[in-house]
Image 1 (cartoon, rainbow, N blue to C red):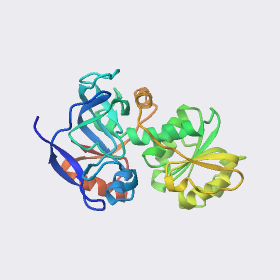
Image 2 (cartoon, one colour; image 1 turned 90 degrees about the vertical axis):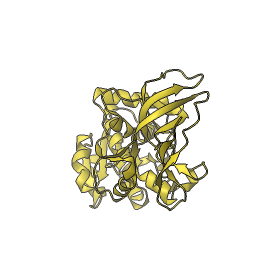
Image 3 (tube, rainbow, N blue to C red; image 1 turned 180 degrees about the vertical axis):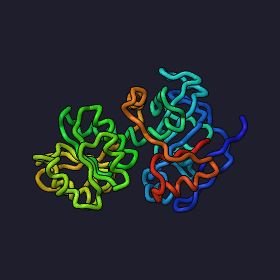
Image 4 (tube, rainbow, N blue to C red; image 1 turned 30 degrees about the horizontal axis):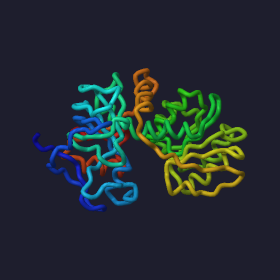
Length: 310
């Protein structure tokens, strides 16, 4: 089989590059081979490249970057049920490993791509939607409860607002001024600019205290949110460094450890097919322009998800 192209990082802190590499091995038991058509770009990709997330990378350098992909199954390993050659799939294979023209990944990290989207839109879904879904599962709030989303403008936050709405939760949010309108569109019933005095501005909406907080920001923002949480309430954070935050009134902080799994990805696809969940794509880039995609994601010069086309 001829070689293929992949975005690889050779040294942490250096610029990734597009390399010609050998194809991946055939799928072993429990694996799928996928012809990748698109990959999602997120802040975590810049974190890996810069070396800030090096501790989460188990592979030796050079590594293939990318945590989100969409494409078609080209081969099915032994013992895999629920997938067939030609199926459109999406996956989070891990914090790295997605941005290559062909990949071999664990089948249980894959789900069927939504029928109502193209592959670039499907590639925008895995990380943000999975993290939001599993964080809300961890909060374990019943319909009618309230949740405050800190940093609602990114992919995790916007997915969380939409999934919370489907679950019947009352949502409050803080985000940047430019993203307030979209947060309301996605279901936030009270939303404020994080640059302002949002704690005081959300007190009426919080009532006697929100039942849960989803933190995607950390630091002082996380600490301040405790003023709006009920005593004994729970905060779930996506940031490992925020999990040890000590808060008053018996409020606990727990880290969501996101994992890609077929059942959750298929449930996410179902919401997309029903029109209950969307992840807007802001711009698409060729594989040769992946550095531009990473730069613009880092600088947040564009709204919507950046996608690399393989």
